[in-house]
Length: 246
Ligand SMILES: [Zn+2]
Image 1 (cartoon, protein in one colour):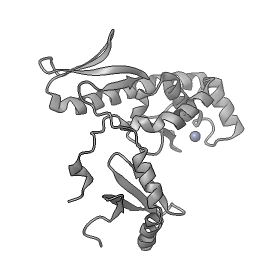
Image 2 (cartoon, protein in one colour):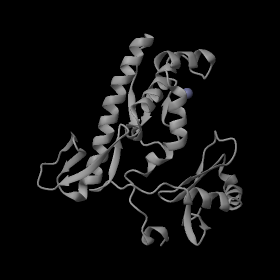
Image 3 (tube, helix red, strand yellow):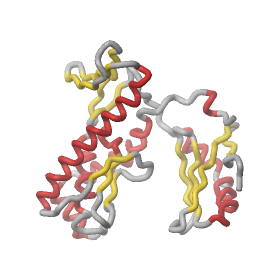
């Protein structure tokens, strides 16, 4: 119907609205991706789109606050420090080296070979592989402890959840957790593996989680306080060009 995406004007900036229909949504769901930037809006049916936009339009102050509270982008370029497993490592580029990624302990750095143009892509691919390897190994250990069979494990770029467990037993994790301290992602893995036993958040479920990790409260509050900061990594700083829509 619309040829151009809808926009909302927030403090002089045109912010695109990504409007989606999800029949399972029971109401309007409004979220802000401060890094794109974009307003993510979900409504239950096609005919509610207009009302959903009006709903977002009534919440411009809230949207503006979400946009301004975004952490500073930490692009994947030489000189940025990234917290690999929660420990800061400086990104170093060595253009003459072959196209590889190597981690050094002293001083802590990640050396990426090859053309700097491909550095961001190469580092993100590597981080995703590290996440997949680490999280799968940890999930295997927890599965053995609980005596459950694990199914497929995927690592994805999810915006709303750190981990999930589907009814067929597939477990997914957000790859960005490889940038959180180990006790944080261990908890997320323990949480999802425990769902292979209890597909709910019952007392028995939490007891199972607690049998695997002893510090879930600390991990949960870390995610609450610092979780958003993980989304700042690999994001290029906004330039005036991508702030104004064509
Ligand atoms: Zn859960």
